[in-house]
Length: 375
Image 1 (cartoon, rainbow, N blue to C red):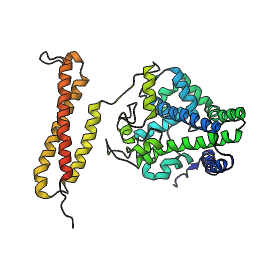
Image 2: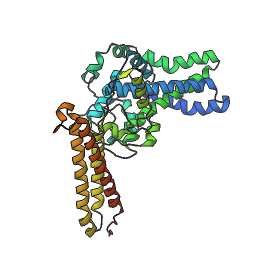
Image 3: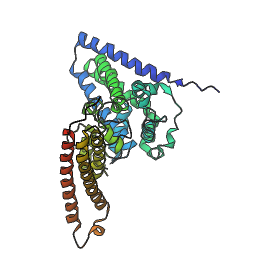
Image 4: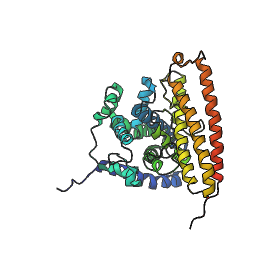
């Protein structure tokens, strides 16, 4: 029996390629012939920021992963401006994304990077695959009245944000063409490919800092290109964390906005991966990399330093395990021999810091070892 040929999504093909062509040709033509004015620039920047935050902070971290809770005005904002990305309703978007996480790099992954850059970037949208109905993986979202409302009105909402607002600004300022082209078409294309980069380049460029079990990677460059979603290895390793860039200085606009919202009472229950669990995952990969390098070292040096590496690794893992265990126990049950919980916690932190310093020193020594000559 011959396999059924995949059906092409003609509407998506025409829209994605058409807007891209108009933006690539029309933008330089417009700037060269008309210049770049304030109305179209502000329209582009304002809608781009609102849509980008609605996708990263809303579609992705709130609705797909439920990394925090948000008040209804925030959810409504996300749903309206998220529709302006013209990347489908939140129900369909989250269904694809949850399947991606459940089957990353597997055949069922909608934007499986093992099929190549272009497939993961946008070709998967061109093909109507046999994906499970959205309701099978997003039943929780279907119970949200605002989400159900957006699913019914997604197309009018998306077109209004993408082209209605630029048209209104253009009519008010006498610059309809510029606002529609720059604030409308170009903005749509930029928003599209910022998201598409997450599915493609974020699985190709950067370091695997916390896990090698999936293709996702961490990259400061991709964090900028993908609107703060570039620390992707961390995200796939700890998808329940509301942060993508775990360090304070990591470029992650959604993280900062969510934190600010929590301070004014519009966001609650911000979920974070335990520091000990994050460090443990990172150390495990560092240990694996150090052992790989150790195998290439001069034989007599390997015999001396390999046990030291193992001992430093085990001490740090033991300290991290004790800290994690203590953090998971209620404070009253964690008291031992009448030692207050906070005192025991401080002792565990001190032990981790001491073991971590030793671990870093050991890694530096491993990196300085001369490698054996290869034939």
